[in-house]
Structure formats: structure tokens, C-alpha cells
Image 1 (cartoon, helix red, strand yellow):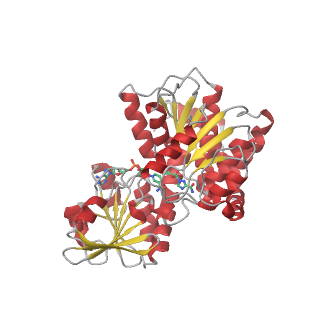
Image 2 (cartoon, protein in one colour):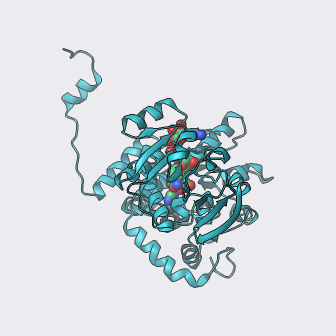
Image 3 (cartoon, helix red, strand yellow):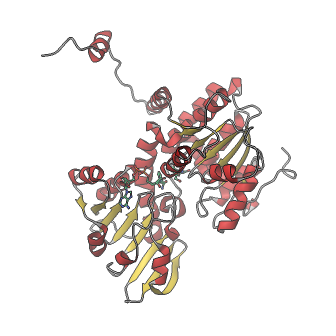
Length: 421
Ligand code: NAD
Ligand code: RBV
């Protein structure tokens, strides 16, 4: 595609060399995706397929985009969060002939304009993170008959798409990439566990050791963050609404408290629930001077910023990613990354090594949609076990790890009932 005729919207072309170096670095750390591409490239499975993507424009996503292009896809891409785009990566991808519509720090209107520009390719496949693109595809007046299906990267997106399915509103099949074990048991846990703390530390340089770290939600993301915060010497307090998750947190050795009590003792608060208004006015008013607030859930709804603002007499930026709210009662609270995904706003998102598996799932799920075009009904589909197994094996292999194989006798034992006491 000629760059002059190609449509795109980025911040600054001059950043392209930096972005290219970053994507090249990530590529070296994503061997599963690379080897899949090498295996598939002779058959060009994406030849002539138009793909619209709405997923954080990061160096890892850059590797996914290059992979899809090298397998024949025609691509158009936007960010899935107003603050997560790495502008140098966006510039590098445009330089490589990809239509990118993304920059860091967009308004809500610009965010949706970028989604619509991305959709104008009239995709056969949508790759989404959070379901904003898929919802816009459904809301637009355009015909969806060219769409074979879509994929969804994150927990919140899968929840939204299942709700669409339940309400009879889903018009094309979706592969729930998040629900693959090689995605949520690694990306959500280890990826967010490390990168959320990385973001908080980059934004504040605080010492985690000795702090009371309140983690809201003890699902995949919460578990990962709790483990890493404890590893850094933090005293972890979990808040939950689900009794089973709360019990797991307690038996994993953490304190479990309702937010009303945790608000009084916490030094650092990290929300990971996918739910709204988890930290709100009644909690802000109980917090200690200097408390720090961050969110790792998909949307910026977990910390009520509206109530933080309405209770403040002054608001000022401390640095690029930290804002000070001086409450009317005198205390100062600090919000990181405007309450958006702290790992992508204040750090670089997940390490390449975990995105390797998430994006291998994205690639295989997209190919599956293309191969079964027309034969899938509009539902949210689970990733097949065989895909998870293939990715886990490839990842182990890339790490030089070998495992055992069941003997025939063991297989018989594990599938039989005759051998007992
Ligand atoms: P999950 O379903 O495994 O866990 C969510 C947990 O939050 C559950 O245990 C639930 O009981 C709890 N919860 C819900 N409402 C609550 C409330 N009001 N107070 C306390 N606890 C509450 O989901 P997950 O996979 O951990 O994902 C959580 C969020 O993080 C989602 O929005 C997901 O999209 C997002 N996510 C972000 C990243 C990232 O890069 N930052 C990575 C993966 C997932
Ligand atoms: N995520 N992507 C990155 N480095 O590109 N980091 C995190 C990256 C994804 C992750 O898979 C999660 O489910 C989603 O962002 C939340 O929006």
C-alpha cells in the first residue's frame, strides 16, 4: 500500500525509528508467535482477509500486527484505551504500511472517531480488547455480512459480549481469547502482577515494602498483583464480593476486609474487579494522608473520579502520570494514570513473554474464524483445549523445558474404574 494513499492518524512520524527498535526487541521475546508464523507462512492463511483491530498499540501488539500482515492480512488498527498508545510504535507501524489510528491522550470523541476510521476497512475479522470495536460494529448502520467473526482479548470484553449474546444482540461469532488457559492464567496473573506494580513504581517511586497494599478483587489480576506486592514486602489486604475468592485470599495468607475498613488502613489501593465504583466518596473520606490510588481493571470506572473531584478543593499534576487531589477535609490523595489501566498508562503494559501466548491465541483464533467462515452461529465460543495445549507446549519448548508423557498403562488407569484400594 502506498503510504501517501494509506489512511492513518498518529502523533509524530519522527518517532518511527524508536518504535521499530522496540517492536524488534519484543519480537525476540515472542518465540511462540514467531514460530507459528514460520509454520503457517507457506499457506498464507490470512491472504485477502481484512482485519480491523482495536487493541493497545504497544510493541507487543506491533509484533502481532507484523505477524498478521506477513500471513497475508490487510490491516487497520486503533487503540482500545485513550491513554495506552505508544506513539513511537504507532509511527513505526505506519512506516511499515499499516493503517493505524491511534495516539496517546485522545479525547472520548477522538477515541470513537479512531474506531470508526478502523472499521471503514469493512473487516472480515475484528480483533478486540474490551469490546468497544465490536459494539460499534453492531451499532453502525453497515452491513455485517462480510464479517466472519471476531476475537476478544480481555475479561471485561468477554463479559460484555456474553451479555450481548444473552440479549439476542450478537450478530457474529466471537472467540473468547481471554478464556483460553494460556491467556488468563498467564497474562492476567503474571503479566498484570508485574506490570501494574511497575507502573505504580515508575509513577511514584514509592517503597512497596512496609506499605498496606489494598487489592480490590481476588480474581486472576488481583491474585497476580497481591502476590507481587507481597513479594516486594507489602502487607496485602484484599477486598472481595465473592465468598470463594475471599476465602482463597484468606487462605493464601492475606487479610480480607470490606472496603470501608480497608480504606482506613490502606497506603496504596489497586482495583482489579472489572466492576464500577469500588472505591468511592465514603472511602476517600476515610483515607490516610498521601494514599495512592491505581486501577488495573479494563475501564476507568473502578475508582469514582467524579466523587474524587467533587470532594477536592484543588487538583494538580505531580508528574505525567500522577495527580494530587486535595480533599476539602485537608488530606491529599494521589491518583495514577487517571484511573485507567495503570500498567499500560504508567509502564509499558505486559512483558512480551506473556503477550507471546495471548497473541498466539489471537492468531489461531482468527485463523479458526476464517477457516470456519459462515458455519459458526453468533455466539461467544471458548478456545479449544487443543489450541491451549499447542501453545503451552510451544512455550515450554522455547524455554527448553521438557515434561513427561503418560505410559499406556497410566492412560488406562486414569480413564478406568477397576483399580481401587
Ligand atoms: P476475574 O473475574 O478473574 O476477577 C474479578 C474479581 O473481582 C472476582 O473475584 C470478583 O468477585 C471481584 N469483584 C467484582 N466486583 C467486586 C467489587 N465490587 N469489590 C470487590 N471485588 C469485586 O477477572 P480478571 O481476569 O481478574 O480481570 C479483572 C479486570 O482486569 C477486568 O476488567 C479485565 O478486563 C482486566 N484486565 C486487565 C489487564 C491489564 O493489562 N491491566 C489484564 C487482564 C485483565
Ligand atoms: N495487554 N496488552 C499488553 N503489552 O500489549 N499488556 C496488556 C501489551 C492486554 C491484556 O491482554 C489485557 O487482557 C488487556 O490488555 C486489558 O485491556
